[in-house]
Image 1 (tube, rainbow, N blue to C red):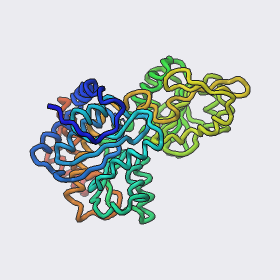
Image 2: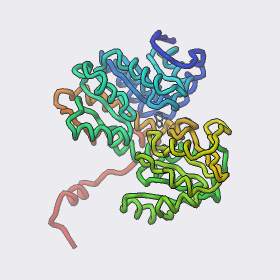
Image 3: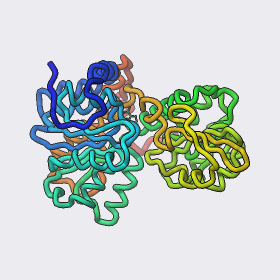
Image 4: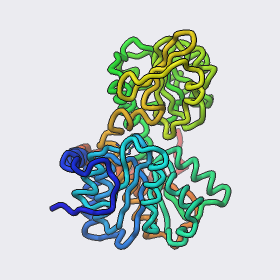
Length: 423
Ligand code: ADE
C-alpha cells in the first residue's frame, strides 16, 4: 500500500517506482536496521517526535527514514549535499512511503537552504544531521525553535568537529550524539565505505584504469586509510600526504610512500582529498601538477580543493563527461576536476554500500531512541554513542553474517581482573 504526502520537493515523482526497488535492494543488505525496525514498530520509542533530518538522500537513508517513521517519528527529510540525492529514492519516499522529502540532485545553494528551512518548518523535537548544516541553521537563524528540541544526532567527522567547537564556545543549545564516534560507524563506514565508494566514484566518472597509476591520498584518517587500501588493491602506486606525524608513520608502515603534498602532486595521476580541511589542494599545487591529473574530493565539504583558484588560473573550462570538468591552464596543461569538488563517492557513485550503512544507521536509530529516553539527564554537549549500543550492533551484525565468536572462560575473566599473577 502506498502512502503519499503532499509535502515534498523532488525532481520527478514519476520516478517513485524505480526508487522503491532501489530501497528494497539496499534493505536486503541492512539486517541490523531491519531488526531495529521490527522492534520500533512494536515499541514506538519515537512516538509523536517531530524529527527533522538532513542526510544524503540515498536508498540506505530511505531505509533509516522508514525505520524512524515506524518508530513513531514524524519525519521531514532534506538533503545534506546538493549533489548526493538519488532522485528516484526521493520520489519513492514522498510518493510511496508518505515521508515529506525535500531533495533534488543538482539543486543550487539557495534551494539547498530552502529545503533545510522546509525540514525545520515543523519545529522539530529531534534533529539528525550529516555535516551539521541543519543544526547550524537552527541555531543561527531559527533560535526561536530551539526550546522544543530535546536532542540530535550527527553522522560525520566534519559535523562532529563543528559541534565540538560549538559546545566549546557554549553555543550548542541541545545535546547531540556523535554517531561518527561509534566504533561500529567509523571503523567500517569511514574506512571500507569511503574506501570502496570513492574508488567507485572515480571509476564511474572517468572509467580510467587504476593499475600502474600514481594515486595520491591526502589525509590518512579513517577515510584516507580506506581509500589508500582500495587504490592499492587495484594496482595503483599509492602516495599518502599527512600533517599528523603518527598517522604519517602509520601510512609509511602500512607500506605507502609518504611525502609532502608539494612533492606528491607533481607525480600524481589521481589525487583524492579526505582531510576535512580547507584548501589542501591550492593554487601552488596546481602549478606543479602533470598534464591530465585528475582531482577528486571525498571529504564532506567542497572546500578541500581551492576551486576558485583553479577557475582563476584556468584559460578555459569545459565539461567533458558527466562529473568531469576539464580546466586548461595557460601553459596548455589540462587538469580534471570530478563532481565539482563535492563528495565524489556520493555525487558520481551511490555512496557507501548498504552493508556498512546498516551499522551507521543502526547507530543513528538507536542514538535517536537514546536521546529521547535520556533527554532530561543530558547536557548541551556532544556525547559518544554508549558502548552497549556499539557492541550490540557489532553482535547483531556478526550474527546476521552467520559468524560466531568465543567468550572468555571464567578462569580467563578472573585472570584479567587480577593483578597478582606474573611470570
Ligand atoms: N554517506 C556515505 N554513503 C552514504 C549512503 N549510501 N547513504 C547515506 N549517507 C551516506
